[in-house]
Amino acid sequence: MKRGVFVIALILQVTISSYAQVYIKGLKEVVLGGYNGHNTQTFDTASVSDINNEIALKYPTGYRGLGWIKYQQQGQPQEIPLLLQGDSLYVSIEQNRISFTKNSPTSFYNFYKQVSGLYNEQEQSLVKLKEFYADSSSFKKSVLSELGKLQVEKNKFYATMETYPDMARTYLRAETALESTNALLQVQSPPSQEQLRVAQKEMEKSIDLQTDILMHWGIIHRFFYSYYSLSNVLPGGHQHSTDFIVSRLSNSPFRNEYIEEIITVLQNISGRPDIAEYFSQKALATIEECDDFQENGDGISGRIKRQMQQLSIMRIGSPAPDQLLDNGKFISDINSKYKLIVFWGSWCDHCKQEIPQLKAYYSQLKKQDVEVVAMGMEDNADIHKLIASTNPWISHYVGRNWKAPTTESYYVYGTPTFFLVDEAMNIVAKPKSVEELKKWLEVHQ
Image (cartoon, rainbow, N blue to C red; front, side, top):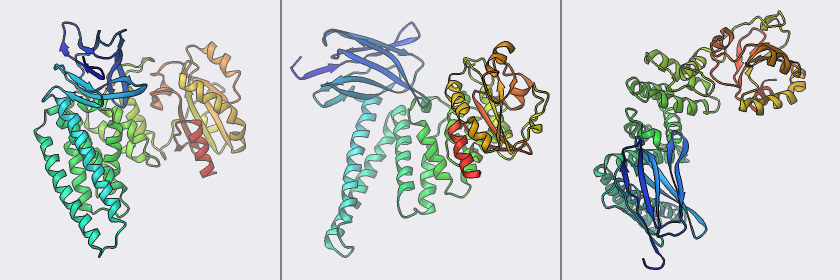
């Protein structure tokens, strides 16, 4: 091997076990990984003492989607995207030049990303340049002419995507639609309804929920966030987006995985709880069997279904269930402007962050006429009594039982869960944290 040149050979093969092997030669240390929803997952890490030695890595044979290898080159972190689908793949790196197995999905994917990036850089430079000249200037007319020629070249190149292998075409089509949509949403002058509708249709062409390929993409949250943002400025609004997605979820073997990711996106759309609520209502009404695809560490079966029930039933403005507390009073008997109902447990890691903040904020809450009602989801009553004795608020023992009447009536699917209710027991806010509670009270007090 010539000095300054090293070759990475990745051979992806299906083995008798449930893993495919990846053999790498030319690096001392490398990490192989992929994506699960919006999360990054590492499949394997290995190293050797000499770059001429071979590194063997593995990933699940069932994984089909975008993956990556990460390594260090001259002290700088490097990352190369790969399309993992069980085929043999070779990656060669010569100084700063990277090449892949001819006609492999990975070669098409990376070639397209590189060339489209160059086109976009040229386009941005010309757009900036034309701003320096008056509209009547011959220089500006010349720049506009070059922009027109460049657009023709780009369109011809983009059309070649349709001849690419399925996986490469799927990802590139979705990424191109996402980039185009974001560009439209960020322009200073409002785009036409026709431009927005075309962008919406292009995004919808990319929404294939019959396979889990979009789950292994890495930017699934960005995609659906932009899709809903686009729909919100079109007739039909978010209802159109939800109706479209739910129609494609009904027969999908991966519907629960996609529902969980989409709900997470919709809950993070600031100031629009109605979007997640409508999605949940529509999904529950349309999909007959919607249960959790796996039990989480706390043994909640049907977590996804309960999450949608909470979003669709426990909406802001809806009445919260009343509850007879351990002190002999109902929640509605508490004489305060607001009651903050908190489901939590000392075993919950997130609670260990939020409850101390709530405790520190409690005296201020009392000044704002807010009382805290803590629903203790402890393993037993003795632990609950011990912990309750150290807290300044009203405590009620529920137990670590997701099927307890109180837990089910509030459709609790995780901890901590907060409900802020008014004197009439109507839900006025569902903060995700103490900080969100503070911000709400600052605005509404």
